[in-house]
Length: 115
Image (cartoon, rainbow, N blue to C red; front, side, top):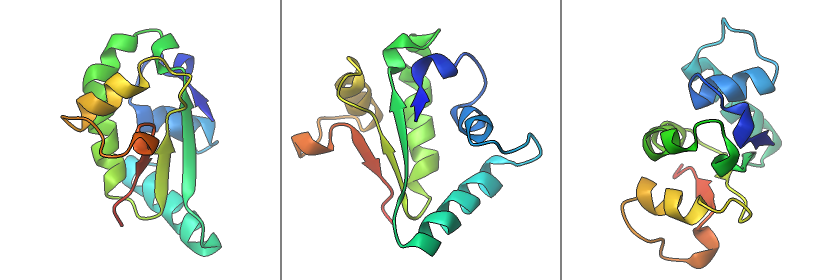
């Protein structure tokens, strides 16, 4: 679980890296490969919950960062990102990230890798 107020600066993947206890020497691709391998070895997806994006120090930055972050995650097999319904702007962010409304209301707050 990562909270919106954890994202005070840096790239979203860097915040996740830190929260998971990886050192600064671990790059983005290496981190995502590790998480995907972890998921593959268990046969379950790796799920990261990101709650309260609207409570992050600079919530407006998600307008640009969320589509970028989701595009990075989209290439990772076995990885899901979840934005709980309590996040008031989750629907807006989802629609912004995918340039339209979701086809299924249940998918409003769950991003899944296509692989």
